[in-house]
Image (cartoon, rainbow, N blue to C red; front, side, top):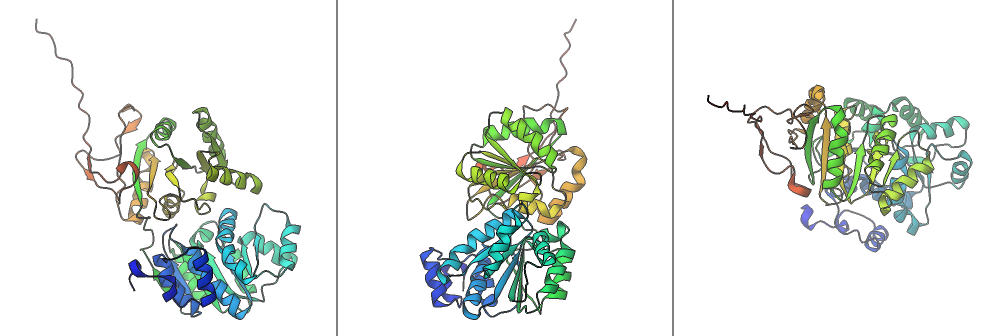
Length: 418
């Protein structure tokens, strides 16, 4: 069945679940939902590879909830960050409610007694970060013997953040597991190793090759010296009037850049590991509601923000690894909306830029701005007369037009004839 005429009705979903989806006005499945749901409903193990913002949560949420409603037991969703745990819970809650099922969110930053109380109510769905779930396991406040379905969401990020031993420890406690579903935008070797050890003949569903960027995001690269980045950011905030998400590599720098943006007159909030869970939630909710126009974040937010109307993502710093670039820019251009991503790199980071370009299989379109002097601004790092063509076009059309970069000619003043 083609995506254009696909509906949830044809995917083998039970009538009661179809009624729920109809009430929620979910009509047309996304490509990952179209392919993953029928296989998941058959109880088979799945490895799903799809870009961020393509509907992966419902791709595993619908079959998991239907299975719980029919067979009982519990489902466990492991995610790398607190923000993503909350996002997954919010997305699946409307599916649970009509079946009188409940969920528990087990994440750091929140007090243990409230989570223990939620566990004692025997939730049907457990959504957890590996660290906090292991805390509960070690303290004896939770058992995973009733878990029959395990889902690893953004699995590559979990291993990137060093969660591998904790994930393995958790999986050893799931003694009655019948199905494992693993979803991610990239598929590094660690994930393939996990699939081999903990999954039974998994079916791979690849909506786009690993590392493919979202088609609705146009991309742009500035190569500038570090001391000019703030000026470029100020220019971007003047050019783009919508919501802006700025990624910084470290929490100390995030605080400094937040102060700089505030001095520019923009309303801004920050989220990183030094912020409490309450502060993070307040920042994200304020960003969603328009209290803040700009959100400054470390990679803790690269996969935990699901806001469909972010106009611009700015990589003020390059990510620690190339794969995080895909997840960062996936915060814009979601749910069919167009978005734009701008990356700032220094002249010494050509190797890191090359790694990103190799992963996404395209050359990032270089841009220059006339107001920056040649002393501080490197003309895109591009060779003279080299042409770059961008992605699929987004706001302002920054990555869609071909641009020819030529070195500036400096005319020497003519001497007066004597």
